[in-house]
Length: 223
Ligand code: SAH
Ligand code: DHB
Ligand code: MG
Image (cartoon, rainbow, N blue to C red; front, side, top):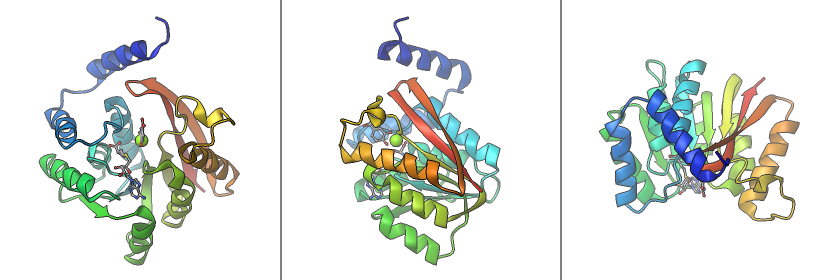
């Protein structure tokens, strides 16, 4: 037990086998993503189950996701929705969105998931204009440089009691290394500082290790 990536992966497999039901739909989604050449940067199965639980725990009926990829996290969020609930998910790459729509359909969730193609900063004002908020749960997982602006939009599109989650806030510890000036990392750093400083947010972050290495989620509730 050296605490290295391969141990984390092995323990993730053990936990997933112990806790998660076998799920052919989710396996098929990952196979479709691979076949379409999408990067395998979806949440892990255990992290996905965490998103389902969060949706359930919060009783979410309106969920907003920023960064769909092939819809793996989207399907997990949708599975946790209360009756009559919907997920709106924003994806920049038409190719990713197309794969996601197919996957969502295969998961039997086409009626509750709305995939919006375009840069999230274009789509989010449209969602506001359409009156689709307030969202109960927001999952931020698109381009990391955009996180500070996605936080602003999350605040505009939520209500007191809503929950905002940011993925990938640790990035193998790079977030805490001042020598790293990659915008993907500085974006997350600025996001974390903005969450911490915001008078309407109470937040924490949980570091995670597992199939995807060392990373973490930030979780905030809107006051
Ligand atoms: N949430 C997914 C993973 C998302 S990966 C899952 O866990 O299954 C990040 C996605 O954000 C990629 O598909 C990328 O194309 C998309 N993205 C990047 N920039 C974006 C932008 N400006 N607006 C919307 N989506 C964007
Ligand atoms: C990576 C992981 C993610 O969850 C993501 O949203 C973007 C990139 C990565 O491992 O590179
Ligand atoms: Mg992510």
